[in-house]
Length: 261
Image (cartoon, rainbow, N blue to C red; front, side, top):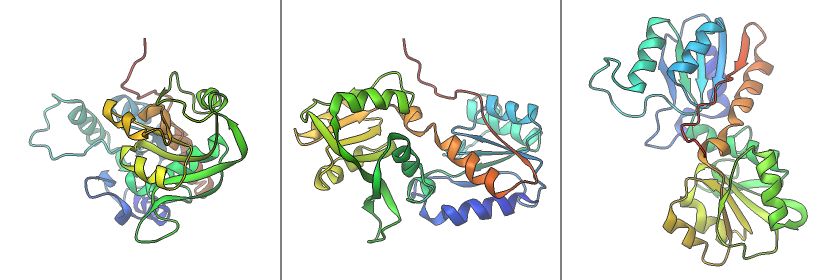
């Protein structure tokens, strides 16, 4: 089976044209006609992940984040991106990224996965694109009944496997309607408020952005890696359930560049 058959399948779920203008999703390195021997799923594509693929005899790495975002003028191994690309090319490893196009679909998308892990029901797109109900930014869902705000934060640590949660003032003793955006989601704060969310779960909030809660919503930042780490599990499920003629693996490498002390 060829690489292009895998990428065509993934793009039937998250069409490449749904990626944001700044993004670089798609086949970054590799021959679309190359036969697949094995696939490794990861959140990030690093030199260590590529070495893991080599050790597992996988010649395709499917990651959420693209290893290559910006143009390169040199590839001499002086930067972590260059090192990863050199290792992939030398070892004939195809690198494929499915990033904001996977963020922007409801079904089998990044935010649906988060919502399912924390137990939300009645999911809908938080900010629909061009009035489409299944495409857009973020997800909005609800619990069957209200839960205590601190109880929810406690359960969030367990279900999302995060060390700490940065949050705004707990202005509501109970929460039921929850907005979700994996990764950097500050651009959706006002949308979450306008849709009546009690709490907005996201990542990468800056200091001044916490003021945007404006005593109307609880903002909860669990970290970028933490919010999207189960995308690895999502990709593994999509690929392994569709294709049985090669092995699919989840990376065992924690690629989170942020350390906690």
